[in-house]
Every structure is written in C-alpha cells, then in structure tokens.
Image 1: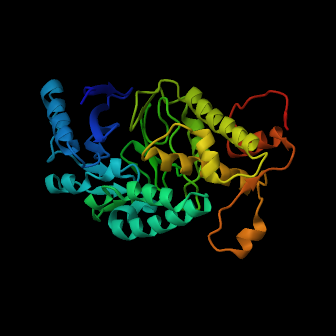
Image 2: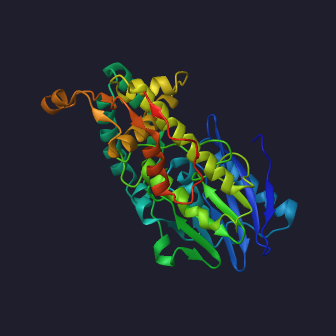
Length: 366
C-alpha cells in the first residue's frame, strides 16, 4: 500500500479510520471503520482480490496499535456494503469467515450479492447486445467481453442479513441516503458532520455512469438527481470521504463541479452528433486514448449521456428504418440542426433546482 491509515473525528467525537487497500491492479481505494456510541461499523470490505484481505487485516491492526482502539473482528457490530460493485463487496466472504456481524445492503443491490452468478449472466447478455447496438465490430466485442468477464468467476453469491430499509435507513445516529445512479443500490452514510460517500462523490473523478438500459436505477438521470439529494446537507457536512481518492472539504463546490463535467460532456455530444454516429464512435471521440477495461467504461459513459439526451428529445435515431427492419442493427444518433442549450440547462436544473449552473446567455449550437 502506498497510502497510510488516516484518522478523522467528527464534531460529536465519533472516530473514523480510513484503511487504504489495493482493490485491483491500478485501482486503489478505502475501507472505513466508524466508531460511535455502541457501534463499530465496517463500511465496505474491499475486493477480496489479491492482497486486499491482508491489507484490511493490516489496517485493523494499525487501528489497534497506533490508536489503542479495540477494533477487531469480534468487536465489529455491523458490516455495511455501500453498493454492489466488486471492489466494495468482494471481500464479504472473507469478512463473514472472520466475523459474526450482520451484513447490510440496500434492497436494490441485494441480488448482486445473493444471486451473483445469475445477475452476471443476465448483465453480460445485455452488455453484449448493447455493444452490437453501439456499432462495435465482432472482434472488438469479443475482446471487451473477455475483459469484462475476467476475474469475475473468482467471486460467488453470498448471503446478506439485513436491508438498509429494514433499519429505517439509519444505524443509531448514522443516517443513510439512497443515491442511485452509479449503482442501483448506492448509499452514502452521514455521521454527524462527515459524509462517507463511497463512489457517489469523489475528490477529482466524476464517478462512472452507465446507461439505465443496462441496469435499472442507474443512468445519468438518476445520478444527477441523487447529487441533488445531498444539497440540503452541504451546510452540515464539512468533510466527505469517498471510496477512492482524497477527502473533499467543500461538498457544495464539488457537487457543482461534477454537474458541470456532465453538462460539458452533453454539449460535446451534441456537437459530435451534427453528423450521425454510433455510441461507439462517440466514445472514441470523447475518450480517444483509453485502453483495456477502460474501453468498456468509456462506452458505458458515452452511452449514459446519449441516453439522457435521447430521452429528452435532443437526439433521434438517424437510421430508424434499418433498426426497425434488422434485429441488432447498429444505432446511429443525430441531433436537430440547431439546439438551444438553455433547454438543456433547464433539464439539468429540473433535476437539481438549487444547482448553480452557468448563467451565461443561451447559445445556439450550430
């Protein structure tokens, strides 16, 4: 691990420990331990891949040796999974073997853990169909699908004990907010003045988005709406700790920055679709230098933005006749000759009425 254990204290004296973990090659993140009142909460468990479990053990040991906390598997009272992505829940099997604490997840991500193999098969089928519609060649689809399935067979279904909703979306004074978009069952945890944001808000990266056509309760529409859910709490939150990257000390500004990233990406797609193009082509123009697994992430990101625009009538299917006749035909998108960006800002503002979007004079993209 290149990073070291970090300790934070809330305004009401809860202690939060940030354990750095190598989740996958080239992907690092954090497991958080929260100590408050009678609770000792493990927020996420890492990937369980490579040295992830060993690094989690090392982090717990450092919490004990450096800070004198009685934190071990026998004192952990609850294990909360922030959302159904492997880098956050993959270590559940190991944690269960060491600990009797109940494992808690939001209902919309329950089946990701309890019916892992079933969901993987269904999602893989949808993804392959989507890549065909995105205009990728059979050879490229085969390569991307191989990367997608790589290592996923190392994981297996695991039972969970409780749903967040069964506990009233809280544990003592820790509150949970359901913020779908990045993942259907994504939650964040609010403890006093500190937000554990998992992958909903990160310090420098705009969290990955995929189209809702692949998985319900994902997509840019849900994600931007979920960002808006945090705005009433920004005055209270002075520190945000994500599942990756560094702390965020100004949540309101960071929310604004993330919305702006998506706004500019939507505008760029409107420029690109002056001529008809597929999601695959849009992805290559938005993210020309990506390699490996990031190719899939780029296609999903582009697709989420295309979906957002098409839902609102900013894009139409240029080859509708072919799509109507031929099953699995690539879909080409185009926009009207002139698009009023004021209408796009109105759509974004409708999702977040308090968002301080640019007040520049409405432009016409032509």
